[in-house]
Image 1 (cartoon, helix red, strand yellow):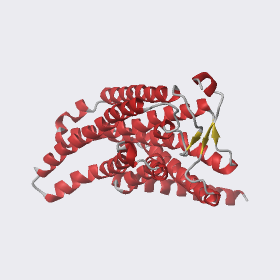
Image 2 (cartoon, helix red, strand yellow):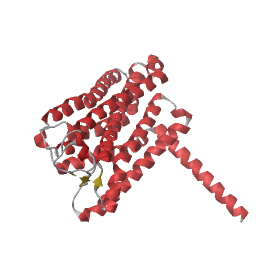
Image 3 (cartoon, one colour):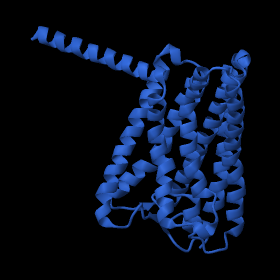
Image 4 (cartoon, helix red, strand yellow):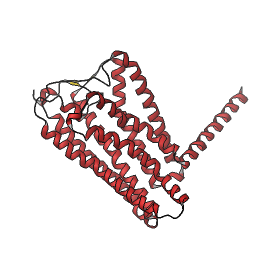
Length: 321
């Protein structure tokens, strides 16, 4: 079947499980995770936007990460919720590859932002006298813009490779359109495409990861030179949140995309994909807020202000009555 005819056919997404009795628990899980992700990241975005003390490169990058996390979950979760609620598991040909393009672009942007944040921590700890120059506003804008260009080109390549093959099957063993699941449906040999996915995907994912690793090697060397254990703990505490997010993000990505094809499991792949596409974006704001005193203080301050405003409003209503 040629590509032109394929565009009139819809794929069927099997979701995380084909068992009907799991539909309600899965729907509840996705609703809860999506609400926590949106609320948590919106709190971080609001704090960084409104509180002057957070108008620094580190927190502005964190705000960008929160925006990307909201977008990442919004690409897959609403469609999954609709499918679970309505029982209609179909997705159009164009809709499938639009989802694939956006997911890979936004998902890889997470990786690049984590690398830029590692550069920020390196500059702050290892080059404090040159921090303002290294992490200037112009540099940050250039790094973020360049990252968007790179991930968009990468996503375009992946989308072009998967949308132009001939399909013999239209049932995707996944809850969203992803490259490994789509390649399994091809009528033709996809070994060349699989090699391209592995090599090019490795460069896009492993490049930022190796940069992060190199940054932390230099950071650890600088921290170990500090004479006091208190100074070491304080310095490490500024990196702990970022390092936790990095480990959580990359462990699931590597397991999903960088292993021999003989180890692919349709069931496990769907579960692992939930980790980096739903759970990690949901946990990121809580990791940063729970392990960051400035963020916790700001949250308490805003909550107390909101409570006082609410009490004042109630008093005004009571006085009018």
